[in-house]
Length: 194
Image 1 (cartoon, rainbow, N blue to C red):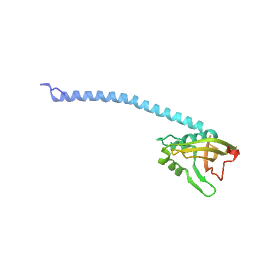
Image 2: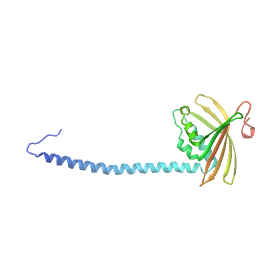
Image 3: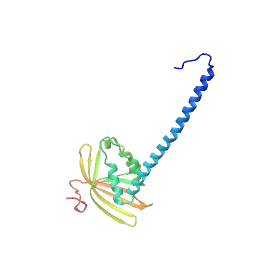
Image 4: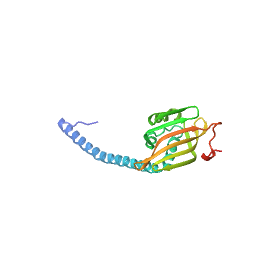
């Protein structure tokens, strides 16, 4: 509480208050500069590290395929990083799940919306069992046998078929087609089946 002293004009109090406010504002501005510099430095560093990781990841077929599996495998309560996943795919990429009776195809945007479903927040695991890569002149075809397990313990095996293209110094997934193994259609030995 301010103690008023007799015989001191009111404007003196205002002047002292104003002077202290200017000093306080100057101190805040001075420290804010350092705070903002630190934030900019950290943001740039993290972005550079992430960009470096992404650059290395998409430079090879194995790198981009492994990164996709890393991104879609999550623990309970986590959310899939759809920005990182989008970076692995060509903007016009398509996704098709198929078997002998049906095939359903969606766009990249629709696929990423599906990955935001709360079902996936309960946890999902997908890992590679076997892989066959064919590559020529900037195009590649990958047959990847996978094992998957959801949060309810449902396990399955299947084959992912990736089509990729190389341009702009990196690989892009342009199509992902997959099917699930069934009793009537087991995975062939040449793709890691039994």
